[in-house]
Amino acid sequence: MRGGGSGAFFRLGRAAGTLLLALAALGPGAAPVRAQDPAAWLAALEKRYAAVETATGEFQQTYRAPGVDQVESGVFWLKRPGLMRWEYRTPEEKLFVADGRESFLYVPSERQVTVQPLTPEDFEGTPLGFLLGAKNLARGYEPSPDGGTPLLEGTVLLRLEPKHPESGYDYLVLEMDRASCDIRRIVIREHVGNTSEFLLSNVTTNVRVPAGRFRFTPPRGVEVLRLGDNDRRE
Image (cartoon, rainbow, N blue to C red; front, side, top):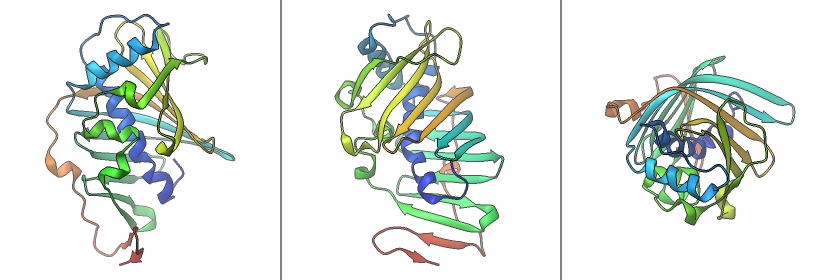
């Protein structure tokens, strides 16, 4: 994710929704699924997702665009429906919080908070829709085997192409453990060709997450930029 760019941060909403879908597979082991049956993999993800309410863990994100190859890492918390907190810790501290009504991007080094309203329409047809309780994944995605080479041992690649062109991305690639269906890696390719790759670790699901984790109040003395129909600075 490009440092400081609000547009790049607000795309995190889509990525986070994808992660919660994926993290649904990080519970108890699943029955093995034939690698050549992408529809069965998708059904397994849907079944696992139904039982997940919260997820927390560590991530490493690599954002690639023309002239950009940026690696960042940190920790995250997700909670249905549509609550999230991403703390980027290296190489620069950044914070992204979504409270269900608004999203906040805080970059301490810039002393600026960018606020954007969130509506159900913002999530429709995107991975963030899973945070809102979407269950029929086959209705929103066309699954197929991915022809790439797995990064990790003992995994299989599943490509998901959104059926709604307004989704904002071309496809997702999920790298899944062949035996357990655990998601190890996620790749999101945008329409313009940029990609975001997430490596997940130390993930736990269905743990208690305090409500305050998903609240954010801009610190005193920072500039607040509110995006919407009438952008304004405070």
